[in-house]
Length: 152
Image 1 (cartoon, rainbow, N blue to C red):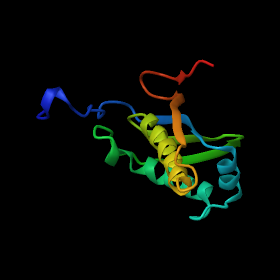
Image 2 (cartoon, rainbow, N blue to C red; image 1 turned 45 degrees about the vertical axis):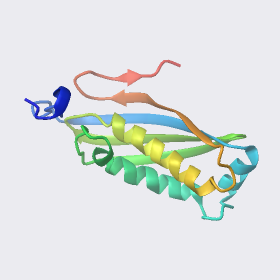
Image 3 (cartoon, rainbow, N blue to C red; image 1 turned 90 degrees about the horizontal axis):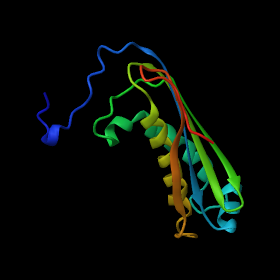
Image 4 (cartoon, rainbow, N blue to C red; image 1 turned 30 degrees about the horizontal axis):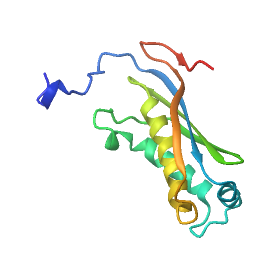
């Protein structure tokens, strides 16, 4: 029984089997082409936005339960961030793995969001109109509910 208002509660996962859980999430940071060129070249006043974004994404995934109130803290097996460039966008992908009783979808989504925000922070002085969007779960594996893949 929950002592939080409105029946809010953390789900008891104690009886679930431990299994390999994976999740892949993606997102896009839209910016002016010149901003994208400078991000890609590492030519921002604050330094290398791509390396910073990778570290931010990994750190955020590891601390997801501190940001999302009802998430379980999980010992993650791995977090990998991929960053690619288009003319007016940075694409970000995170893949998270854990051997646990609950999934890692939120960790992957938080990793993508934090990586995008780290790039935004580093480039906002030259392009405050950037937008971070399309943050979404692409695929998950493992668990009682089975696998999920976003339709193309």
